Image 1 (cartoon, one colour):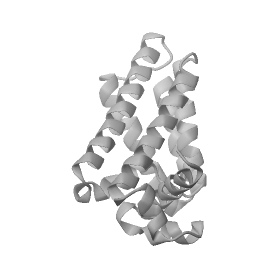
Image 2: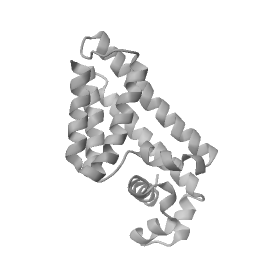
Image 3: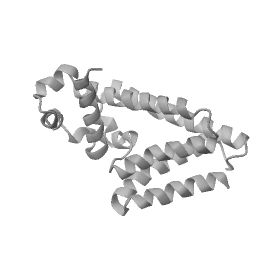
Image 4: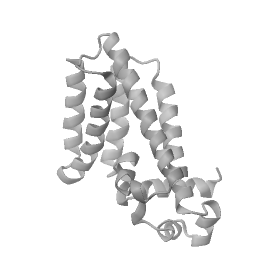
Length: 184
């Protein structure tokens, strides 16, 4: 991507996480970057194109992290995922999927497909980490790893929302308890 395109995607990502996808306009991107709306439209003809680019960038980061973590013990891999959420918490963000979910029905089918791909990839990875961790005696839980992965992800997402109201220490308490419950 070009430098300007990267800046647009980065700012859109921040706006989605803070305000929601339908709550910002190209003007909200153009003004801070000191460009005209047409410059944003040049790189992303539609807002859906921009949304897809943001989701793609998030998935690229996720895949990069997963590769970096793959040699670590499963409990450390999961702790690293929690740290990603923690950084978003302390930056005042919610997770991208959690922010896009309320607007999901208003999004274009190609954007919905990208969000579905993102959700499936994250659930699949967390499921594998949990199952491998259970096999290696690092995690102890009842039920399927897939169901537990859904619980972990939904807890992480909702903890970011709750932290907006009750403060970031709320996220720390929830994430600490989640890991403790899996390890005991």
